[in-house]
Length: 183
Ligand code: NI
Image 1: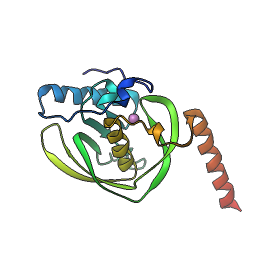
Image 2: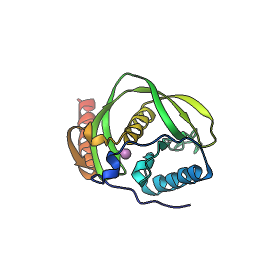
Image 3: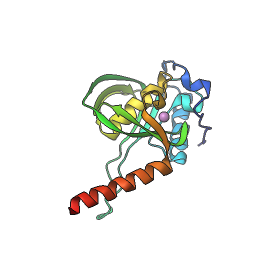
């Protein structure tokens, strides 16, 4: 287990295109493990290898929802190791705030497809095709962009804001909606 240093916006490595993984070796599985450790430590839902300085096409994603607040029943895990991911199809549109472990504490609005179909190999060498929607679709697009050297900031509509500003905005919006509900 190792927590790796997450490169931050401005680091040249984040602008580089990553190379495909040709053979899934013990070393690759070690990188995957370290990427999960690093992502969980930082409280993220996705991480791409270039963010930890490795120019290989490896992505980890965990968008498992919280346990059911009433029954305490754990949600179905949504954890995916994607080696050499390839987006096959996209459809629909979602507009929302997005952040990145390589730009800590900041968020910006990005429009992404609502649904994404992706083909990838996992750490055991098995090939999958997965259809993701909502947050999973957003995470797949965001992480695949990293493999091309693209940060979400290149897609941002309007300004990038701090997470404190975002919290304030969300609160104001919720209050506004409550008021509208009362009227
Ligand atoms: Ni990111």
